[in-house]
Image (cartoon, rainbow, N blue to C red; front, side):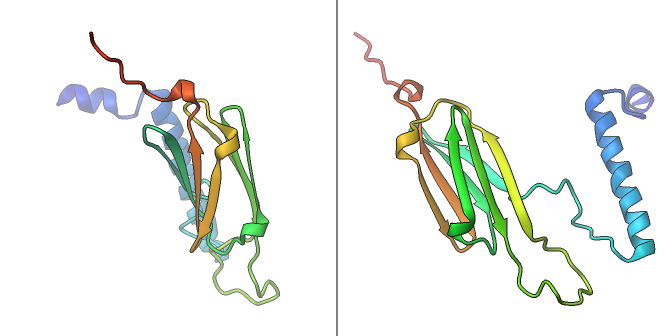
Length: 150
């Protein structure tokens, strides 16, 4: 108990130091935002779109939340072990007087490192109800093989 109190605060690791800097940045944004009326509690890292990368034995799946983005506004590329998603989200009524603005419009780009080699010729992408699903088949060399015991 004493050891935990003595060596856990302040945190001594690099990761904890960066977490502390991030917390201080959020506190400062909240302080200055409350003075100017422009603070949004959702002002985090600014990463858009939020996504998940999952896999099964044959494929990788990238699912990204893209509300208000049309399929024509998206560009998806695969280069080596990287998937790039770029596009633009447009919001109507840009000339309106905002009382609160939490949804941002504009161009975005994300590059996601894939865990293994992929078959770039068979990639599929679908955008349904604001959810982009990219299905990426694994390269044959990456797929697990069953080995018969003799």
